Every structure is written in structure tokens, then in C-alpha cells.
Image 1: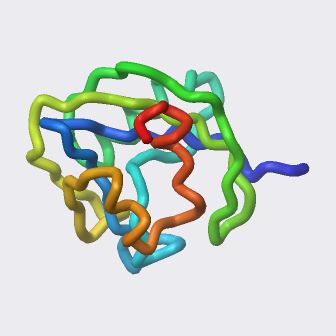
Image 2 (image 1 turned 90 degrees about the horizontal axis):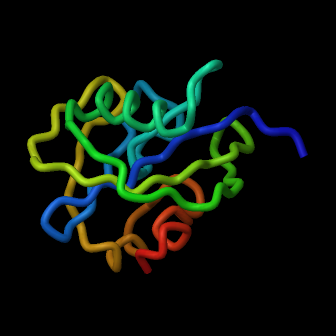
Length: 129
């Protein structure tokens, strides 16, 4: 099975709620909701990648609490190996970049109601549900 690459994904918690973001029209899978994250660069660990991607996409300062077992997921651009992380943020003040046009803080039970990108296995891989 050929992967397009490795993705670091951040499930960010603040006051018992979790950040989910909607992909903008300038992005693949536009209109889909997803946890922030992105491709892991060469010479970068998954932990370094998740912190960098979250900073770029949300401007939040986060702390890694836990990591989950990687899994595969299929998106509009093919198959990816996902490395999930649970992080905490001291603030809910998100500043989006061009990759997302909206964000909300939700209870994880609401994920089933959302039009999400892929299967959204990260919360269960992090033992959150």
C-alpha cells in the first residue's frame, strides 16, 4: 500500500472542548471539517510537525499531552498515514490562515454530526472516546 505521505494531526483540548476547523475553498477537501495538522517534513519528527502545523493554522501555543497509534486514512488526494496527538491550549483565540475559513470548539460526541474529512479516528486512537 502506497502512502502519499505522513500527516501529524492535533486534537486540541481547552476547557473540555476540542477544536475542529473547516477547510476553505482554496484547499483540497474544501468544506470538510478536520482537526488541524499537516504533512511531516523530512528531518522533522511527528511531534515537531504537529506543533508547527498548529502554530501555522491556528496561532495557538499548545502542549503535547499524548500521542496515539498511527493509522491510515483516505482523503481527496489519496492515502495518508496519520500520526494523532492530544494537545492542550491555554486559549481559544484562534487565528485561521488561508487553509481554513471557520472553526468551532465542540464536544467530541458531535463529530458524528459533522461532514468530516476521512474517518476521523484520532479521538479513539487517543482514548478520548
